[in-house]
Image (cartoon, rainbow, N blue to C red):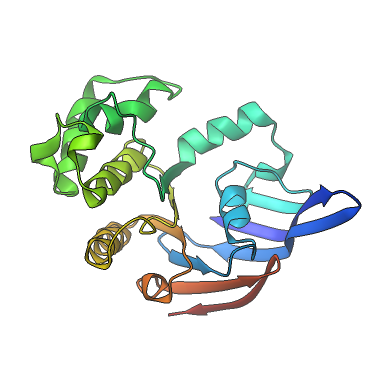
Length: 225
């Protein structure tokens, strides 16, 4: 489903060229659960941004379901993000004035087809799935960190993305809550959801089927866990 061929992303800082991604080759099949690891500055977050169509390569080819992502303009990239991608971040990014269910429904407001009659019932079902059906009318400040991350996961799934991209999703959580979030992601993957997760924690990466290690913008290791 995902094919990266000699992907490079180069930033110019003064007279110095920084290769955030350096001729990266990567294939990810539908249904995989992939963890990307590496130190700060290794290129893992740049890779996630590239996969999520939030950035374009300076060199190389990115194919997503045979779509040439590397050749798309900003409007086309936005449409692909909306259709294919769900995003989960370390800091949740919930809107404080909205209730739980309103936050889950938020991506539908920006969808090409807008809100549908089925969407509220779908959001309710997602909140049941993440064990928050009794918190649907609560605001984010009335939820724990783990509950807020589960809301964020439900929100990421409302558009039925082909790929769920998670950037340090347990970074702001204690170990017990982190384990619960990872078990939820594993359950989603077992149901067929493709997941790419960025983390610097080996114990979090161990939940994935496949682990990729990066350094200096390159993939050093790629193996099945």
